[in-house]
Image (cartoon, rainbow, N blue to C red; front, top):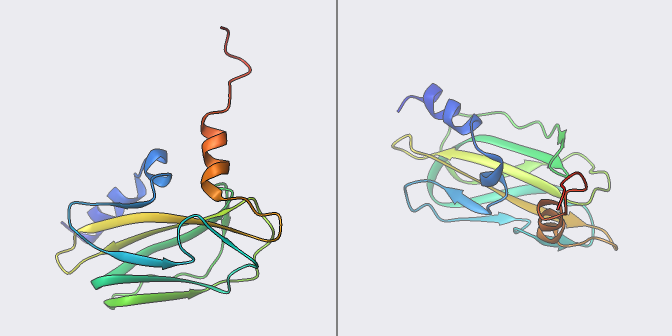
Length: 144
């Protein structure tokens, strides 16, 4: 599969995939993130880290506040393979939660993608509790 085709598939990810922690792929790629998924931090992180069990090329890393507002984190795609990626972050404003979305290509150009959410601060709530409440909120315009 060509890199262009892989990137096109990555951009067509559904909203459901964005709220299903982990990965979407056909290979067994193991990974860890810092912060971890659904983590509540005392303060805003200074960077994001992704660690994989095999060498990959990280082709996408984005950050959004409340799944809406994109944050410019300065990520640039590199052709280099690595097992560990660290992205410095700008100072983050207070938000209900943040979502980091990522995509990586393995040596066979198979795309793997996923996301992780985190929140921070003294009044922070677990991100999945906020997301679940939004997804299952009653529709005020729906008639019984």
